[in-house]
Length: 144
Image: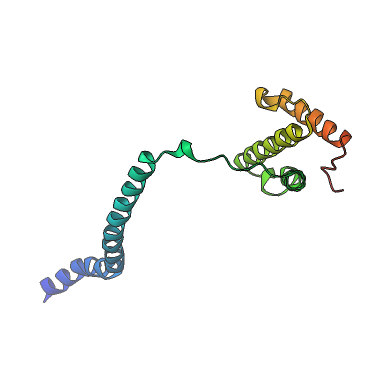
């Protein structure tokens, strides 16, 4: 009787673990099946994309001036507030998009800019200079 009680006491944690982890094992097995299918599909997609001639596509059309101004205002608001205050990655992405739009707006108006060649504080100064040139050309980048 004592041996049976000890055996039950020793086997009980294992039985509980099997019951608790059974759903995880089923989920893992299902994921493995789906995972293999997804990996196969991703490999096919990668093979198709690497064999496709991506450079033969026509370039995307450049946005018109009203669209550029709207984008510049939106990106300007985003770089001054929101998630950019807490995430360096988000700020870098917003600044890159903002600089690209500044370059496009400058090109539309025939203004000289050097944002792509500069980094750090020099790029900040060039950004302010280009904003001033665009403002002098009649574009209001800040709404308030």
